[in-house]
Image 1 (cartoon, rainbow, N blue to C red):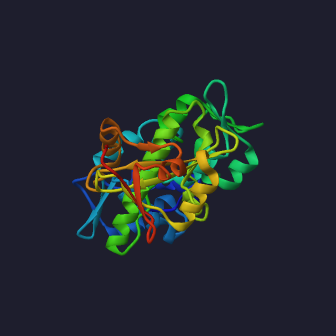
Image 2: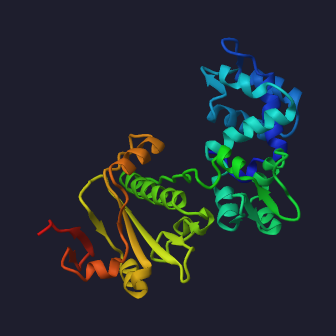
Length: 315
């Protein structure tokens, strides 16, 4: 996926211009001809054009195969109306597909909600951490840029900013990628669940996205001191999880302010949104509000070699 920092408003406008030039399927150009003909229309750097065409292919507005390229029918609604209309439609697509998740998270977690549900953020923080996203959002008249960044509630909901699932990062090798993907799904499910149950979702921060040195994954800033949430996920429905040495020490140090969420039955073959709904219906997350207290009870067994925690049968 092309990184958000590359997606400036200028490049987004050029991507739309390139999209309009390409022939509508079933007509097609050779890739070589497309590069020449599109570049003659939109200009700019040739290497940028290659990435713009890659972006349009990634978002399934353009088809490339057998050395030929064409515009798909899905692109037609985007190219209707004024230039501003087109940018808003294309920008909405990019936001929904997660291209700006890193910048959206930065603005969301460093801002706060006003009484009418709008997201408020200091201009310097927003411009320093999310310049490309703000450049895109400036095409919506309802977004205020001064004296503070203000994104209306209805636009937050329409674009899915803040409540949308964060991007899931996978990593090789296969076993590690799958293990990380399961864990990441659990974390983003907890972020979404906590935000959906909070009157001020900006106070729920996915801190493990930035560092693994804290000993927990999510910070609930609605209380003082902040509550820490460690998240565990598994393909199995049995409540079994492993605590790292850091997590175990942090759990005992924070006491009642350290809780644990467990998501079981995760299936990487299911779509994320669909699975989230299914797991909620199945009663997840399984929450242990005071993990240190629970571990000190007789309801759990713990193997000290790896701190494996397993729920014991009732009675």
